[in-house]
Length: 316
Image (cartoon, rainbow, N blue to C red):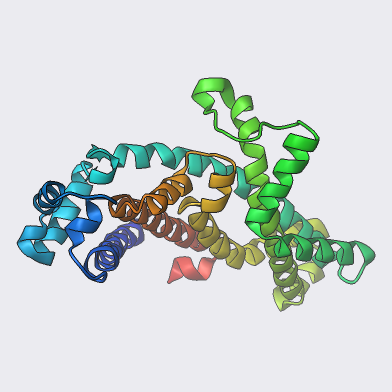
């Protein structure tokens, strides 16, 4: 397992370098015109353009500029002319815990609801409860995230003042309860949509596993039905769910842009939204690298969990 982790770590570094190359090509090489003028802000002067050319090594060619971008990123000193020539990496790193906390809370909610509802629907396939769960999951999937965010805000902050209308209060500032009070609505927005997807996928996967020969063999040996369902059916049924969860969780960590913006959360999504509003290419580069790092790490963790769940993968 140790060798697998090392190989996956090296593979992740290579992928991250490839992502950095793609981001550099999209933000610097591909657009026409002088890249220093774009990175200098909306109203650049000749002096500011010249300073950006030297700061980002554009005067040394594209290869030299790419090396300069990597060096600034690794050193953690990536100054943005659009933000008063301040280092934007600390601001990006401060946004990460906000997005991570939102993703964790949303993931707990949609996994608990989706997997439980899907397993119940599979065990009672064709029943009235199963039909209600499937209709509910379809309704949840159909909600646009941005519209659902506004709807929950109206219901639970304007009509019934149960939650604050936005903003963020970290656990260190107001305690865990105050943090959850601010995060529950945005997390619920993300969880409602994803719970419907996981309900339908869990139901389909569990129904397939219930028909497998090893399940019938375990039942024929006289094992208790609850143990057969928990140890044999659900354990193998969770493998594709874990794979999908890893990608969905990484996508959330990459930035739930609309949800964070609507609820006023200073997360990575808000960081990227600010970059797009101010056309700050430096922030887009840094934000893109952080999002890619989340995806790569999540994929590695998913592979490890798969190996723990599936003996065949451990043997391979």
